Amino acid sequence: LVETKTEDDSSLPAYFRFLNLMTFHVFLQEKVDVAIVEVGIGGRYDTTNIVPPPVVCGIASLGYDHTALLGKTLKEIAWHKAGIMKPGTVAFTAPQAEEGMASLAEEAKKVQVPLEVCPPLQHYPPPALEVGLAGDHQHVNASLALQLCRAWMQRTGRDALLDSSQATSPSNAGARPMTEGHVTAAPSTESSSDEGVSSAAEQLSVPVASPFAITPMMRQGLSRVRWPGRCDVVRLPRVTIYLDGAHTVRSSLACSKWFKTVAESETREKNGSTCRVMVFNATGGRDPKSLLSPLMELGIDAAAFCPNVTVTGPGTPVDMTNRMVTADGAMSACMRNRDAWSSLHGSTAGAVDA
Image 1 (spheres, one colour):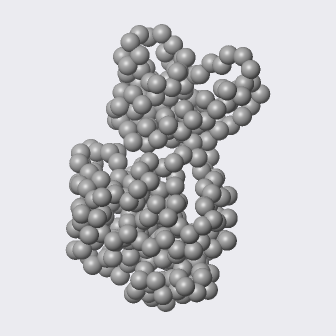
Image 2 (tube, rainbow, N blue to C red; image 1 turned 90 degrees about the horizontal axis):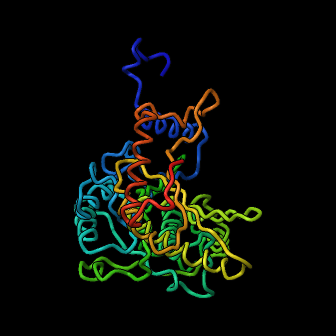
């Protein structure tokens, strides 16, 4: 990059494209066995979608995000997500609403990619699986992860890692020999709270993937998985911090359900009164009122609204510097978030800027 750049840097890739170039370069240099690549926005036109046919593709629950780029309907959003499916691969999806499922099925048929819906986690053979991540929606993601892992092992000749009964699954169709590295692709989407296989799959004749016997290694992976900042609890003396990165209406609903369960459980265990303070931030042109509405019933006593970066100066990490957003713009977003909360709350009581 240094050798080929122009004096005005016009030939340099944009930041996200640069990160992708650097990532794939490192993967190739290190000869990784498998790369799990999550798209940035959408999938079809995302800068990550430059790899040849992945071994297996996964599509998590579709939601309304980045609608200015992906479209305002699930059909349009699903079309973008389906762009990671290429001839020669297989694909799995979480249960979807009919509109989204129809679009995924149509695109899969166009590129002749077998598409299956992941079964509910409780349908796998006993004993019951434990998931290290909190929230019912993570059970849907866990089933997707299991199907992706099994398909990858089958299609790359790693059947020995599975039970012998799984070695000849239909997902193994079209298996190809392992080269230096393979890619498993997964679009970035919000998580679903729907445990059942959607009726949309049945109506569209999208087959449901078969549950299978879970190996000890897979069980260990699910039980030990940790994701800091997602339905996460940090306990300090006299203060408990509940963290989540919900940024769509559906994930905000899932966050609300999770918080209500764990916070009320802790309240019952504590002696004396408690105070619930919410620290909120939303960027990317998202509608703050729609994100805050699910949080209205959580008994929030006070709310603080802050920008992405709360500290500036010589010590600010370069990766935390966004030259596309001014300090005034960031504070204006805080004000909009505060006003949305106040509007929902019916007053400005308890709302402060941070």
